Image (tube, rainbow, N blue to C red; front, side):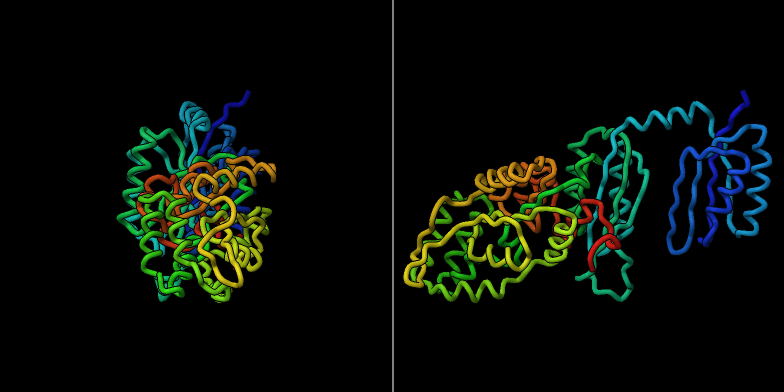
Length: 405
């Protein structure tokens, strides 16, 4: 049997059409096998790596032919022999864990990358691939409206996964970035249901506060709402107190508020994209069905579960109808929808901002605290605080070029 040799070819230079074809045509003349290949292009600068297996007696001829063509192509080629033991060690690493670390921000800085990669390094993980998921950012673009996302594909076993997550959490809070750590498993790109809280998540307001302002009790309701969202008050009791303050409000006020609901940045694109991908979309809200149904029609949402206000003779009575949709009820409804649709809970995304969203956030396969209160961010596995709801698509691994404009 003829002796085999493994070579690592590292090719760099200006990218141009046909370059990969030319190199692989040369290798094919010597019946070389490609054991691994990877290519990246940054600002027309190419970096191409190929791990090839060749017959030892043909090595010198391959080197000569590739180097000769490299002059014509104006590229640099380096050759490194790889020993069999080193190759086997590399093959055995396939059994190690694989993870995805996603960084979201308005702009990406060197300091952010440095600190993230240092945490990865200290945990003994190896970075295999770094990808930019967002489009190129013009220099003159307003930083308040831009979005940038970098995805790290890493391999290994963290020395202390909890400590690593804590460090990412602290880093996110001090560098104007969101950092998500996910296992790179079959579920990551195979989600099928997304459940949203409504107030301060899908829309940029609290409907009950808007109603209260029109009724002259805004300060009282706002105070109760904030305490409940921070987890300082029992939701059911605070809900009844707030609704009671709305007694006598004209029903027409609700319609006016519904027609002017401020949709959260990125929400329409996110939902439209997920619907095209076959997702079911639900709103599970401690707010009111009246506004949820308006969003259902506008955004083509599949399910809406919220609270019904009692209306008599065109006026709110200060009472509600039926069971209150609180945090535990949201989690139950999420499970019910998943069961009806035949969807595993690992395939469910839950998004919310308040303490009453934590039961569904922590039950779903991908739970996200969105622009949430500190206590909610601390308890959730993932959070988005720097950009809009569209950031969820990057956590799923989608690139801008895959998505609707």
